[in-house]
Amino acid sequence: MNGTGNTGAPLLEARGVTRVFGKGNAAVVALKGATLSVSQGRLIALKGRSGSGKTTLLNMMAALDSPTEGAIFYSGRDGGKMTDRQKNEMRKREIGLIFQSFALVPYMTAYENVDFGLRIAGIPATERKKLAEQALAFVGLASRMHHMPAELSGGEQQRTAIARAIAHKPRLILADEPTAELDSRMGKQVMQVFRELVRLEGIAIVMTTHDPHIMELVDDVYALEDGRIGSASSREA
Image 1 (cartoon, one colour):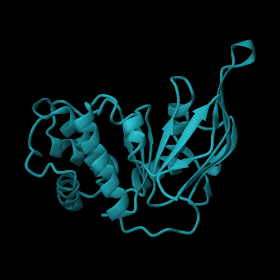
Image 2 (image 1 turned 180 degrees about the vertical axis):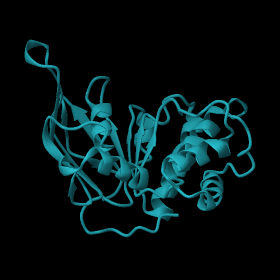
Image 3 (image 1 turned 30 degrees about the vertical axis):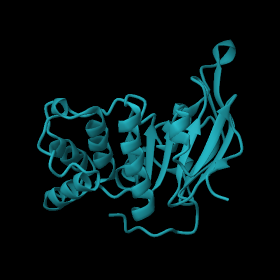
């Protein structure tokens, strides 16, 4: 699905990212000089207690928010120098977003949800059918694509959300607690899809989680503590 090659630079790099909300005595420091490099074909987990800054960092990686200090680079491009329009276009083409709550449109079928995401991304109608069907087949929902979300299990709904996130062939997926609403069996199904995306498509995935069982299935785990990112623990030598 993903034919984009590696440019040599990391797909995403956060350099000394600090994020402060509010001012003066009311200021809240969510991140303090966080640094992280994301390479193609890696499945990365960010762990940390509630309020540690995981979602704040993920939002900035998605160019939905901007650092107070520091910078985020996308294949060597400084996000701080991009216009809002350029950021929006980058998200449409290069980044897939997956949310804890699935965020499916309830009155649309699985296929229509994926097609809707492609329309938002500006994909021509002539390409959308093939891309939507390919994405749904990849996540194992070829036979369920014409069912409404209410007719799907929690795992199937999250796999529909994954299909929507990958249908436009992004290079990077950002997922906020994607297995939190699922039982362990369904969570493992979702992680299996993630591993296949990394192995077969070379996509990089950064996900937040607090589940130790999920952390055993990723390539690298980074801990967020007091707004900073600690050293990675890895499954590989």
